[in-house]
Picture 1 (tube, helix red, strand yellow):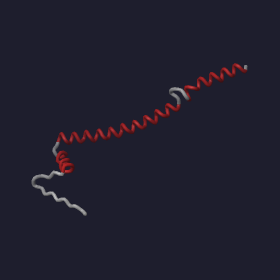
Picture 2 (cartoon, helix red, strand yellow):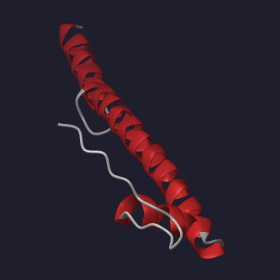
Picture 3 (tube, helix red, strand yellow):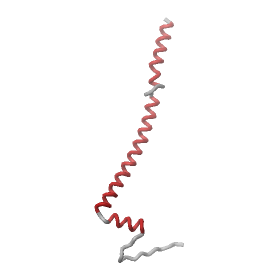
Picture 4 (cartoon, one colour):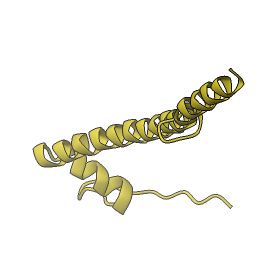
Length: 90
């Protein structure tokens, strides 16, 4: 009877091994969930950036207002009938 209980206990340990330590264990699932949440956050951020870039491309292709705004702010350009004053603080 003693040998039978040792064999059964050994089989129980062998059955439990994949659940706790082996491939697909609880720890692996926990790590995969963490990686999934990190990747999901990255994907959401990139989706927002893609949406903003698509909107900017649409503005640039459909109208001249966006081009004019970029020229004014990024390049410092002014129209022909406008005056530009720059105030420098010391």
